[in-house]
Image (spheres, rainbow, N blue to C red):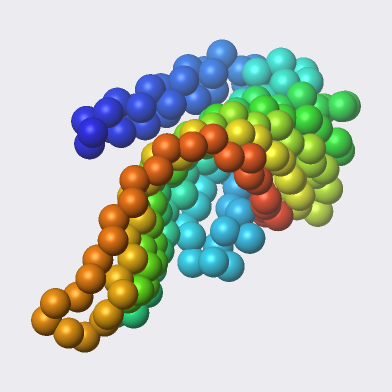
Length: 188
């Protein structure tokens, strides 16, 4: 499983790099962004958005949340790739997007925990405001369908030598947000 993750991440980065080489070599046609909503939850993230035609751009984002306390943990890592159609030009104004998101997670507390992975496709709508010559602010929200495969653990007693533990395995398709971001981008 670990090798599949590395191969998938490598192929996504290779695709983003290839598209970056094919894009025109002009100023402000690429952007590096940080999602403020994810950062507020303790999730470290970084995204790259590259123009490939005068109205289309492709993006790739990586997410990692290392928050782990004794009573609660949210260990997540994932990536998202997608394409955006801009109404006028990349990084300015309205846009529509499609994404593929994959996430591995392990979160929970002393009584309940969830561990598994999910992958899905979604569509989004967003708007980008120019703040300065090389800076902009982007708001984007999207919905999609995810295939989830996880294991849930529930503990009935917490401190005895014979704790009861129930383990449930689930595979399902759910509708969920694919994007919820307010990002600050540096254009180059």
